[in-house]
Amino acid sequence: MSQPYMEQSGDGDSFWVTTLGGPHIVIPESACQYWNGVPKDYPNDEGDYGRACEVDGYIGLIDVGPEKALVLGDHPGNTTFLPAHNLFVRWIAADSAADILQAATDVVGSAQWEEELVWDISQPVVLFDSVHGHDYIRSEEHLRVDLPPGRYTVRAAYAQTETVYMVIVQLGQQI
Image (tube, rainbow, N blue to C red; front, top):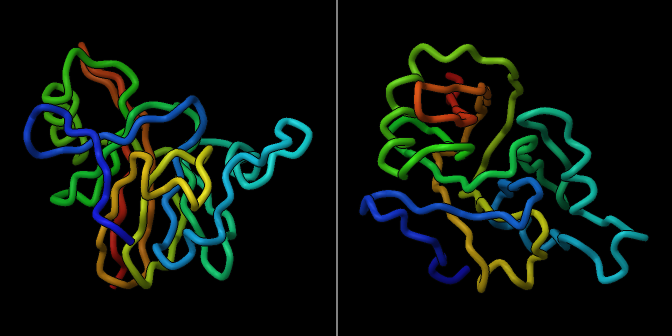
């Protein structure tokens, strides 16, 4: 896969992947070729995008080719990944990227985790808007996340401070 295209937030460290209003999806890199996004005859056929939209809640797993992909559902906000915390941050409301990133790192240790699942990862994963098919991933915003292979506990929570609203999704590698 080519060098990722990402939107820089302005804080110099994070890149945000936007959405056209649907969920984001995180797919193992080799399985991206199986993702077709929204078909041409949408809404008569909702295709892979429809499967992602069926996820009820903040997180869920769906089959993509021979792999499982993580759907980041519910709030369709710009999303980034903080590798220091293995944390996806989904922007609902904040004045700036710096504010939401600071808030995310402040609340991750005390978050009230609402959902949890187990996801096996054997390769780098790619975050992008689920509306796009594999043919468009290289030209659209996406973020490649290189995690060590293993079994991960994925947990999600809605979190807020006085000025920031977000959903955080943390990946914790099981030993």
